Amino acid sequence: MSIPDFAIEARGLVKTYPANRMVPAKTALKGIDLAVPRGSMFGLLGPNGAGKSTFINILAGLVNKTSGQVKLWGMDIDEQPRAARAAIGVVPQEIVTDVFFTPRESLEVQAGFYGVKKADRKTDEILASLGLADKADAYVRQLSGGMKRRLMVAKAMVHQPPVLILDEPTAGVDVELRRQLWERVKELNARGVTIVLTTHYLEEAQALCDTIAIVNRGEVVVCEPTRDLLRRIDTRSVVITPQAPLDGVPELAGFEGKLRPNGNLAITYRSEAASVEAVLAAVRAAGVQIKDLSTEEPDLEDVFLSLTYGDANAASPIAY
Ligand code: ADP
Image 1: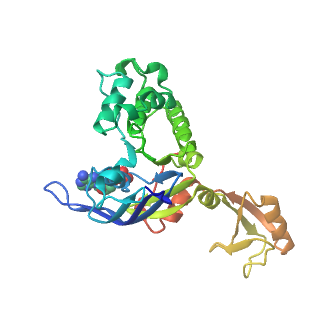
Image 2: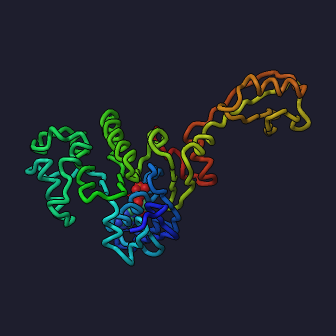
Image 3: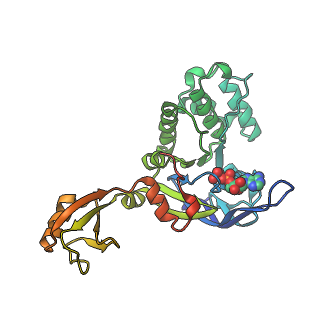
């Protein structure tokens, strides 16, 4: 099998859930184009109802797409459904455990489902990689919530897929447990596993992911390296009330100003590259007398709103 540049590629992916007696037809994905670079730690963000689960369920084979193309590890899910699906491991949102099995038995059974031959199984190695070696023979009901979640990841890895997909651990999962889980996931990524995770915690995605896609109302709003997204967030503004009304935007060395309808001058800058001090120096050098000033820092919601401009219903999409 040749090694693809993209672990996952979706082109023009559409999903319309048909109407039934309870609900009208719903187009959950409106022609999604997404490419997940091989080896990346990829965050899929978006508010509830954006279409994240629909996307993941199509990858996992739990939902049939309406149209479009999906390749998993270079294999088309229509042309080579079994081989394509074997390239991914999916960790579902809900914890589903077999209470009568130990973690070792649980992994063995799962490996059997995937047709992994006994000699090829890496049960102990996988348990160890998720910090469960000393719990291999414990009963699942004796495991903590965090351990159960790591066992879910272990089960998704029995066939050693090159791509691991984590649908967001349900809301309310303890911050410390999430942190422990992410440490393990980062280790898998460092060993070459491509990771895709959905979350609505933008800050968490920023800390973990090298690439982030934001989905809203079934469309990809942005998909770019996290550092580029952070640069958008890094934008700050200094808002100046001038002593005397300005008759135009003054020429500012190194900065761009905008005149607001109330006569204030707003100057945006990147906090990484400049300071309020430098902005003020440029304003003074342009001969503007400052009566008052304030600074504005966009929060993550502003960033989201700026990316979903004109979509009034996208308010308060992201928890942080
Ligand atoms: P997310 O995971 O981002 O919260 P979903 O993929 O679950 O979003 O949902 C996207 C949209 O599709 C929502 O409007 C949701 O109500 C709708 N939807 C999801 N599953 C079904 C289904 N089985 N039948 C009808 N509509 C659905």
